[in-house]
Image (cartoon, rainbow, N blue to C red; front, side, top):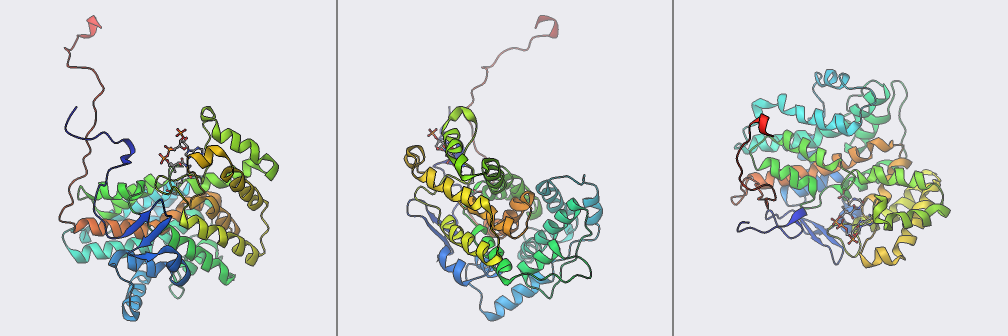
Length: 391
Ligand code: CMC
């Protein structure tokens, strides 16, 4: 034992001070730099939110123009990355590809990785926000055997991404305006969430002085797990497995049975114990987007029935388990024709804004130290080595 606290899962440990995002889990409040998520969702857009997270204030017109200009002019990915992609099996999970390719960016910009130089830090942040969507779309195109589309810089951020995903040569892509609007909203809602597992990972890696591309690649790896960002993919697979509303009861019973190894995906949150304000926004949005796109998805009925059943079940009520951000987001992604394997990649694109904001904040935090938790040792006491013949 030592003079430190045992806190598995860091349930009661603050690892840093941060001025970026505020959460009140009991009240269901989420603020980015003081602005309520509901207001940002209604009035802002993803790039503006990214600027806000990074710089602390909403941009004025000139700041906004200059930020958009810079992000737009860093959207290309290095041509050599194509051969990196070609090395993957065609059926590789896009999160596996994203993690590797983003990590490799350090190899391309190593001459601008002096972490003590604010301009180098700023450029790395811009590059990450600009290039992650390009890489994400390229991973998808590779996985279906389509040629990569270069970013069309006459389009704004979300539309540009949708074009890289779905456009084919000689066939202009016409998207209903609601598509880009819906994706932009999902990106805003996923942009940051204080010290979640992936952001804490980015900070832990960042605390060693490692470069930001390595930090964000580590964040992507942490996000991939089904208890974190991987939940959006897991929710859709779960809804498909349940299949019809009349099977919902069985799924709820299974989720209550600890021996089943099954949890209701998209339910529960470490911090929110009343409701997840992001889920409330997405829930409403799901109905509207599906209606506007003319999509009738029977899985929406399954999701609604499941939510209702769980919210009325003592097990879930007692444990304060509510739908989280990932419960409905998959239904919107699906309506936008984004394949299930890409859902967590969508989350990664949005969270890149938060990751770089936290990384930048940490780099200038005079109190920041290398992240180095202690442990409670439970192994053998000191003992003498035995030669092989005596074991
Ligand atoms: N289904 C069934 N039971 C659950 C669930 C669930 N989804 N979530 C928690 N519980 C139970 C858990 O078994 C435990 O019961 P008991 O007290 O009887 O042992 C109790 O509720 C508390 O759960 P916990 O695992 O101690 O809580 P945690 O804060 O460590 O975990 C969580 C939070 C989000 C990992 C967990 O709720 C979960 O696994 N949810 C499903 C996965 C999911 O939707 N993740 C997305 C999170 S939000 C977006 C993101 O961060 O990416």
